Image (cartoon, rainbow, N blue to C red; front, side):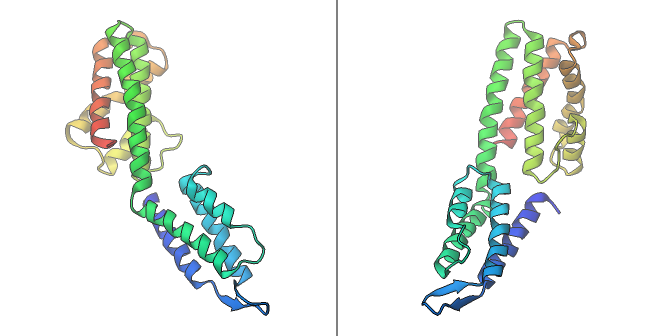
Amino acid sequence: MALSEQISRRFQELANEAAAVPLTQSSIGGDYADTEAFHRWASSAIHLIKAVFGEESPHYRNVSKAYGASVASAEDLATMRGVFLAARADYDGGYLFTVEASISGEIFADFVVAAKVALSEGQKDVAAVLACAALEDALKRFASLHGLSVEGKAMQEVVNSLKAKGLVSGAQKSLLDAMPKVRDFAMHAEWGKISSQDVGSVIGFVEQFLLGSFR
């Protein structure tokens, strides 16, 4: 099961748990959530939101702000549940990945522009490093967006994973086969094994890849 599917399933499980938290009426008035059930759900919900959206996200800040009381009223539960369901809706709607992909595309595009300028000025080696770094990072982010685990993997392994899942095909697959070798030459300063044409090919590939994959 892809990572994105596991996360969606976990959101669903916790949404069901939140709806099932028992409420009891206090002797001093008002309804309160069952302490054990509430804290068990809240801890898992906060952990999931943090893992998916990060500590700086509004969803994480809001759900953390609402949590803290040892005894939770029905209103406390409703507030946390509302934030949690908003986070779930944003994730399932693809808005998190859409924003991430857009930002990634802009960052990589800047690298490609810098590589093109360096190549035009005769700085082949600088252009090679910039272009290959942009390509490798773009491939890893693209793989992650599609549920593939690529942390710590070499570029060739990432390429193989993308091909195995059918995320690259045809001419794109053939061009990608040559890229890891150019990348290795650039990252190990074997400049004599890289031509200006090689660098131009990497730049051209990255440009097309960004247009098709990070929109």
